[in-house]
Length: 429
Image (cartoon, rainbow, N blue to C red; front, side, top):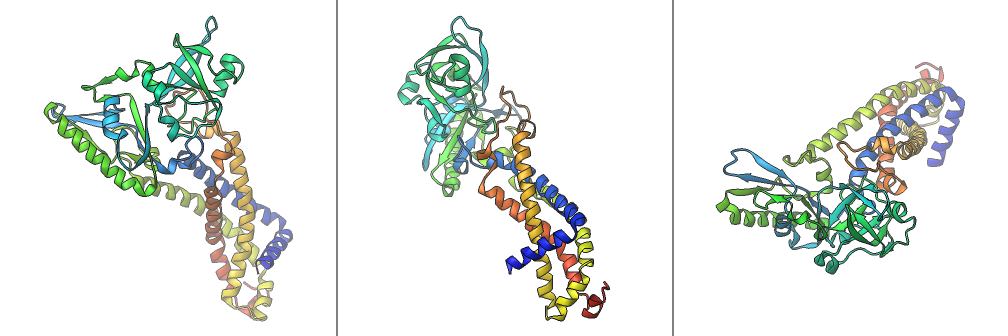
C-alpha cells in the first residue's frame, strides 16, 4: 500500500512539474521556517556537551532578598558564597552540586614579556567538573585538594592554549592572569557560548582569587550561582521541597536582622531557566509554551492555505481518474485516505528538503541566528552537528510535515471523494 502511494505520488509529480515544483517549494519553505524556530529553542534546552545532563539540571542562578526596612523593594541577583553553600550545596537526593561565578569576566592573559589577550574567565569550584562533561585534550581538571588550597591553576580551551603557547602540550606551563602567575592544569575542547552555564575560555578555582570576598547585604548577596545535578528528573519535586525547607531555615536565622529570602520557586529546570526574564521574575512556563505553539500554528496555517489551493487544482485535473477508482469499487473513505496518503509522500519529500535547508542555514548563519542578547563574551555562537541535530529534531520535522499535509490536503481530498461517479467520469467537478 505504501509503495503504491509513493509510486502514485511520484507519477503525479512528473505529470504536473510546474504545480508540483511550486507545491514542494512552498512546503519546504514552511518546514524550513518552522525548523529554524525549533532549533533556536532546542539549543537552549536540548543536551549537548559539556551540558549533556541538561535534563537533570536544576539552576539557582539568582536569589531574591527582602528586608523589612526596604518596604516593597527587593535585592535580586547572584548569591554570596556563604548563602550558596548554606542553601544548596548540601541538599539531599543530589548526585552533586557546583558553585561558580554567575557570569564570565573578561580578563587579560599573557606570557611574561608578551602582549596580553582578553579571554572570558569563569571561576568555579572543583565539583564543576563533575556536573559538566568537558572533553579534555590534555591534562585534567583541578581537584578538591587543589581547590581547597587555593592553588592558582587554570583549565584553558584549545584555542587559548594555542594562542598563548602555540601548542596543546602546555600542561605545567605558567602564564599571567591579570598579572598574577597561574599554571595550566588542563586543556579542553572549545565550548560554544550556547552552553551558557558552563561556557568560558578559561576556568580557575575561585579560592585562588579575591572573588570569595565579593558580597553585600550583610554577606547574603554576591556573585555566585549554583547548578544542581539530580540523580533523576523524578527527584526534582523533592529537591525543590528540600530547597524551600532550607530557605525557611535561613529566614528563621535572619529574622532578627530583618532579612528574608523570596523563593520564586527556585531552583529552575533548564526549560524554566531559559524562559526566565530577570532575577526578580518567576518563569511562566505555560505562557512560554503557548506562545511557541501560536508561532508554530501561524507558520503552519498560512502556507497550508496556499498549498490547499494548489492541491485542489491538482485534484481537479484528476477528476476522471477519481471516477475510474470509484467505478471499480473504491469507497469515498478509501479514496480520501489514498489522496491524503499520496499528498503525505510529497509533503515528506519537501519536508526533508526543508529540514536539510534549515540545518545548513543554521550551521552557516549560526553567529547571526543564535546571537545572544546582552552578551558580553568575546566568542560568537559556535554551532555544529552535535548541537543542531537531535532525534527530537527529526521527530518535530515529521510532526509538522504530517500536520501541514492534513491542513493542506484533507479538505480538497474530502471534496474530491464526494464527487459522484457520473460527474467524475465526465470530467465535471
